[in-house]
Amino acid sequence: MTVGILALQGAFIEHEKMLSQIGVTSFEIRKKDDLHRHFDGLILPGGESTVMIKLLKELEMFEEVKSAIINGLPVFGTCAGMILLAKDVCNDKMNSLSTMDITVRRNAYGRQLGSFSAIAEMKGIGKIPMTFIRAPYIDSVKDNVEVLSIVDGHIVAAREDNQLATSFHPELTQDVSVHKYFVEMIRGTKSGRRSSV
Ligand code: GLN
Image 1 (cartoon, rainbow, N blue to C red):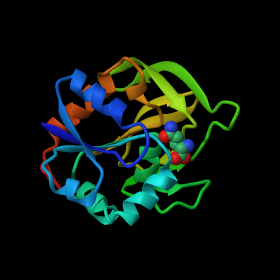
Image 2: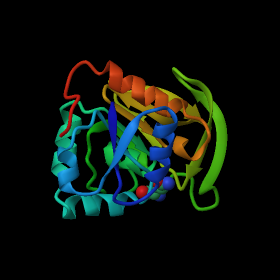
Image 3: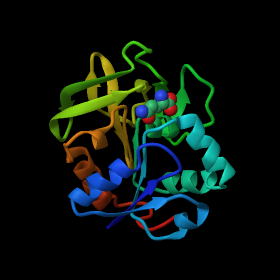
Image 4: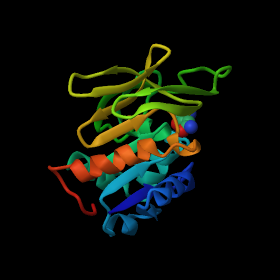
């Protein structure tokens, strides 16, 4: 199994390290051609969602990534990556990939509480450490979306079929269980494409 990691900006190296710890090969997706290599799943890392959207468009990768996800490519978005997946961002006008039936709130914890850690339950995994950095949270989800974690009354992890999103950064902790969960998701994906874009 090979996982592609969008590496235009942000915390992508940390995802590579997590995947290598659990024995999964990955490579960085930096340009359109990289999308034509074989990969079974895609990670959209944390960083600055506006910059990532701009670069995806400038590099002519936006539509290909979007249609691959719509066609069933397993994807895992962390923090800014979650904003990229959201169909709706309630406090900002974004032109995101808009593939997942969630409404997110950007920079939802304000400046004071911009960064914090928590230990909380994630459905299907158990208690895990969570690192939040100027994080969004999920305001609301449609019926087809499974809520996987709630911290302080806010949804911070969710799944819709082939799409997994977390407000927090599991790759900035020592705990590989969310990455393992994603790898299991890739293995279990029945419909859709399992190869490259
Ligand atoms: N605040 C960033 C954004 O809105 C997300 C922060 C992160 O990915 N750590 O895109």
